[in-house]
Image 1 (cartoon, rainbow, N blue to C red):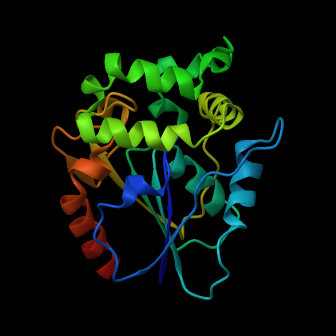
Image 2: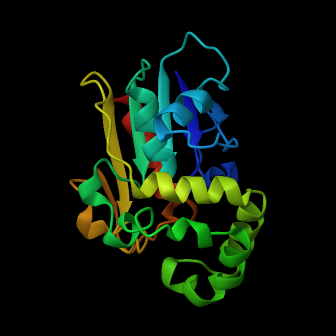
Image 3: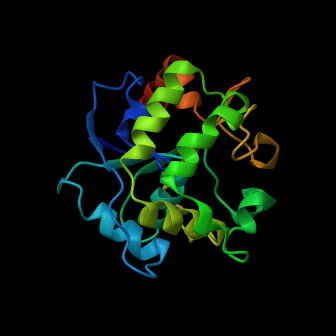
Length: 217
């Protein structure tokens, strides 16, 4: 089997680098520039088209927005399993603060400069320490404002596609996730106690062990 990993909004593949899953064939899909008015479904298919062709069974591992995109990919492609890390599966799990972004056009203010400057105010409460703050600034600094604003708006209006019953969905979520709150999440398979939205970094060992065990089942 092959594992395709898709990072969260504004992040890149470095969000996954603490995971110990090197025994598998791994490919990272970093964000590409969206077309003007492109739907998240159309974008997801275009992103997936950049993956290397393979006859192996495909497992998608998506962090946050990467999990949303993974479900869009699986809705029209043969995917064996989706492993969601700090992500959602329905609009009911999206907090109100995200739902109002598109109606109020708040995405216009979502820039990388604002993210980098403001993290000193919200970072600690969202699980960032000195090292992960540096990493965040580096990752989001690589993104374009047009991508960030498009992604923020797309997430705000997202409604889950129908994923075939043959595609298993496995969920990992931290109880201290302030971005996509744990209290809204339905039946995670692995609960990371006190885990933040970036528990994929901070709790990589626990998550790695769970993924490897799950893939062997």
